[in-house]
Length: 260
DNA sequence: ACTAACCTGGTC
DNA sequence: GACCAGGTTAGT
View 1 (cartoon, protein in one colour):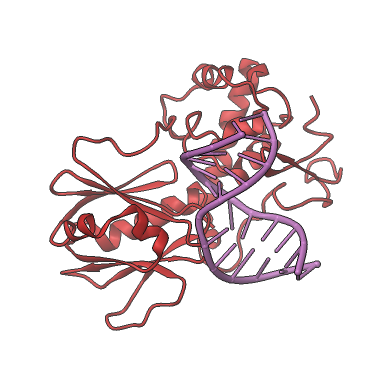
View 2 (cartoon, protein in one colour):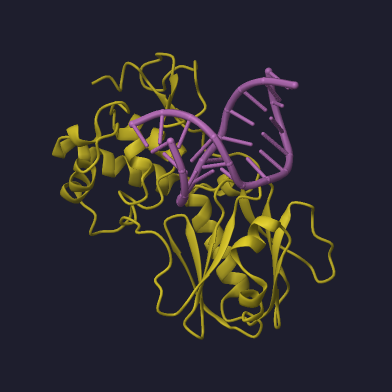
């Protein structure tokens, strides 16, 4: 489930439930989470107040009143689930925020790959991330400069969070289709007009997904143009959509519209 | 620059 | 039973 639009919605859920609240206890129900947050660190969270919830790329941050930061990353399958007091959580619930002054909030993550990490006040959380796709300071020359440092093909380069934070496997393919760019071209081969088209395409597909009320919950959602559509006709030219693997990830594209 | 690893669950 | 999955990182 989680690519950037889903993480943005999830961040809003976390904010609504946790911002301004005091943590009574963070319960970790999976060994992989306990490995990253030792019991001693976990204990220091009792009584901590969450003053601000933010998102950077696919990462959620809960900033604590004492200056520390809890970083939550869903990775492949996470989602928040509000629990009613006393409700017994599903087997796929890997962590539960118990609040002193609000109902509990559970991290439901079937694959158990999500991470929760705690960062000291003077330690900036986690890896260097590139600009957000919607950052007004991000323009074609900036994108070109980031891509110029890469030797790999365009599509895997877009998955590097240092280029643009938040672009995942689905929207990398979707953006390249919309911009009519060949995913296999060297990342450094883009012309400025192409970088501009790519930037606009990324902003369009992300905004469309974020505005789609059916995308996060179950039910109808805007159909994707290429992702998971191998063999189906291209919505522009009817050519069958192709699938290949780049850097171990599926790439979907139209061999005709996206030929270089 | 690719592969394995981290994990579980759904689908063929 | 085998293969696939929206992410990231460590190792080769």
